Amino acid sequence: MMKGRDSSRRRERDGAAERILKAAIALFTERGYHGTPMRSIADSVEKIADATSPTDGVEAAAAPPPTEQPGPAKEKEHSHV
Image 1 (cartoon, helix red, strand yellow):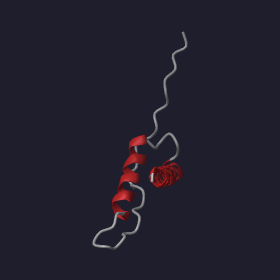
Image 2: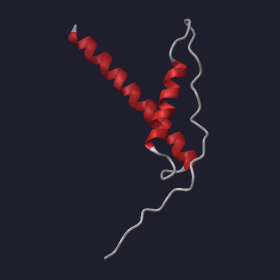
Image 3: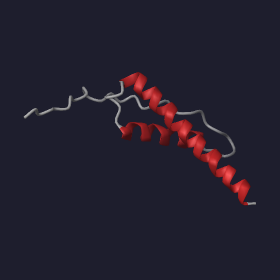
């Protein structure tokens, strides 16, 4: 019985990883790597999860990634002493 539970958890974990990767790729493509904070990826995954959770027995379509545009990416300052 534990084996079934373990494989179910593994599928859930793999599904979560897949959703995170898809959201990250979409946002990186839209905004670039440096213009995409982790919070934006997390928000996108949460919106997709909310949109795809069954409501009254009907599954909703996946939400697109957020469209807010971040300000220009800041360059890290390096001090060379």
